[in-house]
Each structure stands twice: as structure tokens, then as C-alpha cells.
Amino acid sequence: MRLSESDHGRAWLDQFATQDRPAASRLLDGLVFVPAEDLELEMRKKVESLAREGRVAWALYPVREVEDGESIFEPVGSRVADVGSDANVRGSVGWAIHLIGDMARRHPLLFDRPSLTALRDMKVRRVVLVDDLIGSGRRVQRYWNAFHRHPTIKSWCSHPGLDVVVLCYAASEIGAAALKRASAEKAKAQPLRVDAIRYLPRGRSYWSREDWEAISQVCKRYARATSRPHLALGLGGVFTTVVFSYSVPNTAPAILWVESKKWKALFPNRTVPPQLLQEIHQDPIQWSLEDVLTQLGHSRLSGGDWSRQAHGDYRQYVLLLALLAKGFRRATLLGDAMGASEESCVRLLKVARRFQHADADNLLTPSGLRELNYARSLHLLPWQPPALRDADFYYPMSLRGSGIDL
Image 1 (cartoon, rainbow, N blue to C red):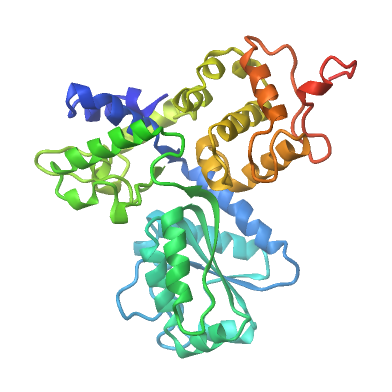
Image 2 (cartoon, one colour):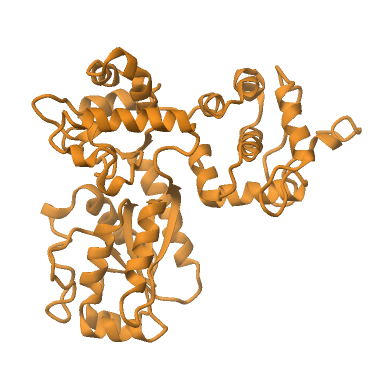
């Protein structure tokens, strides 16, 4: 299901003038809906990777809103104030608390929000701040300020030995860069290191320049009907497109989540209505390879039957080549367009370089162009390529018909 085809989506689109509805529909269909189970599964994998890093103690803390001037460790030796109470176990803080607690029970070297005294006694020198999204970066920065405010933490940070990682599902490129700059400005403190499953550009990376202009203009024009027109492209103009099942980030365009007497939001007060959640559960929002290829201008690839017959890994591989042909270089942008993690994109780029379909600068080679043209020529793919594996990823076109049994 496309979100623009849902009952709630159609009702929201009815607020737009006829000529503005195509751009508003592209905005809706560009949103990335992250079910709670997917969020937890992917983040568990990330935390599990920490647990496998030998005999190293990690302290895990959920990022939460803090007041100006607050210190996480005041008084000395206390736990994070009220962060584990039932009243606070909601939204992004709630899932992070449950995740940290469960992982700490499973792994003896992962510690659940230890006090300052416990940090000292256990000689912890690695800290993980867990969050769902780095949007503008302000919330994580405020939390880090409160964490770093205690003199003992400042002292540990001044010595190369306290490694602080912000672990999150998604991070906007703007927010991650701002967070790194802000933390680097602290006297003698090491910059925070961001480890995200997905990195987000402004809007969607596969939108054409014309689509981007049309969508952003619609966001700005109709934001005047909301109570927060200054957030037309989200807080700080970050323009994120991720929607979690429990919350919509304030870095998303205001017309999606801000209401007024003149405007009805699709996600009022940044919540996902239960009826819409039920509708999505019954008919999940699907990432569409065909839609992405169409918006990239690859009409022959998007209309061919090959993609419905091909193995999933080959579909992703052809999409990678199609993106490289359009000038995509960075794994972060490739991941956004492909609906994949940066790690998966890096792996596919290695495959492309191994078969000389891409060069060291991630430019499509003549061999890669021939492979792409081969896919364009197919209506039905006559063979099923094997799943990508470390030793035997994919048979390039040059080996087909050579007598090798696929």
C-alpha cells in the first residue's frame, strides 16, 4: 500500500488544491514508516555487535529530554533521574529503556544506566547513548551536555580513554555533522561518534530537482495554515522522512504533524493515529523498486517484468548500478534510495568493484553500463542468480552462457 492510497492519506490530500496534490502525494509516498518490531530488531543487532567486542565493558544510557543546566550525575552516584519510572517509559525513551535493560541481562559486560560510582568501580571507558533518531542533533547535544557537566566525566573526557558513541536507528546528515562539531568544541573533550543504521538526506535522495522544488514549495505554502509556519521543512530545515510507530520527529515538515483551526495534520501532535496504525498493519507500506526507478528516470527498468522474477539481491544490485549511473556516490545517499543500511550499500559497492562494474570512486564503468543495459533489455529474467555471499556474490553478464551451471 502507498500511504497516499490509504483512507487517512486521501483525506489529508483533500486539503490541497488540485494542482498541488501530486507533489503532496510524492511527499507522503516518500515517508519511511518504521514498525516497532523492525526498530527493535535492527537496534538489537547493533547492540549485539558491541557485546561481541571482546572483554570490554559498555555503559548504555537512553537519550532523553533534559532541562538547561541539568546534570545526569547530580547528586554524585545517582542514576539518571526518573528515567526508568513508569511515567517516563513511553515513546523513544521507553523502547530504549526496555532494549538496554534486556540486553544488559543477556550480556554481563553491558551495563544498564550505571551510576557514576559504578562507572568508576567497573572502570568503564566506553559509553553508548541510545536513541531512535538524530534529527537536528539538539536533543542529543543537550543530553550530552548534561552527561558531560559533572567534573569527573569532564576529567575522563580530557584523557583519551572515554569513548562515547551515539547509537541510533537513523541520523540526518545535518544533525550528525552538527553534533560532531558541537561536541568537538568542548574543551579537551573527544567528539561524539555517531553509529547509525541509516543516514538521511533532506527529503529523499532519489527525488529529482523538480520534485524537490515542488514538494518543498508545497510544504512552505501550506505550512502557513498551521500554527508553526517556521517549521515548514521541520526543525532546523532538516526535512526528515522517517516515521516511527509511536512518534513522528519534529524535523519532519510541519504540514504532516502540526494542526490548527485551518489545518488537519496526518499525524496530529506527532502521534500516529491508532486507526492509521491498524490500516498500515493490515496492508503494510511497501518500499517500491519500480517507483524509485521511475523517479530516477529509468523507465525501461521500472516497467520490465525482470524485477518481479529476479532474486532480491539481484534487484538491489541492478538498483545500485542504476543509482551509480545517475551520479550517486556516497553510501549514505545510496542507502536512502535503496531502503537499505549503509553497511549493506558498502557491501554491494565492494561487489560492484570486484566485478569491475564500478571503480574506486564509485563511478559506473563501461562494464557496469553493459550490465545495466542487459537488465534493461529483459522482460522476463531467464535465470535466478544466487544469493550474495562472501565468497560467491554474483555472476556477471560476461560469464553467462559460458557453460557454467547457475
